Length: 163
Image 1: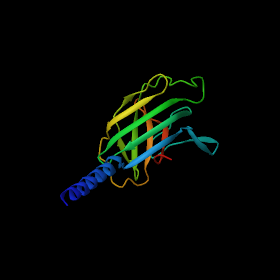
Image 2 (image 1 turned 180 degrees about the horizontal axis):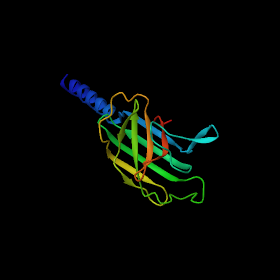
Image 3 (image 1 turned 90 degrees about the vertical axis):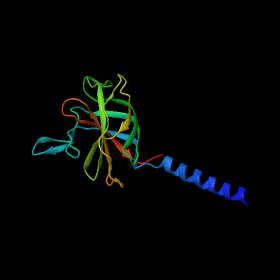
Image 4 (image 1 turned 60 degrees about the horizontal axis):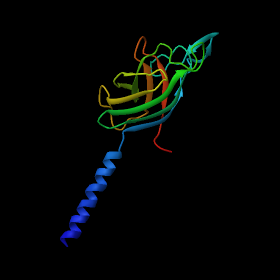
């Protein structure tokens, strides 16, 4: 009987540990590059501002993005190909050398550490958000932003895990 009880306790412990290890507050898989103009009103362009964050000045693309934020505020994000998708700098990162992510939960911003953007537009963010986001994170939005200047947004994550 003792071996059976031990095996049962061990399997319950392993199962709960595996479930906890895979739990995320929110995940993002894929990205939408910024179009800096949301529309035209009264003959003038309307900026594509998201939750108070202005858009990057030109169109951008982010070919791949995977991001996960844990309940304790840990963030792990990997982006590939954050590049201009229009203008004379098309296919380059231009002068942008650093980025960070902002997670919005119910419109409240939580910022990641700043990381380098390589010349191919690739970046990896690992660390903790500046503040622990609420759980659950309602209406999650993840913006990839310029670390310099107005800290404009270049791309937004698409909520969801593996498909």
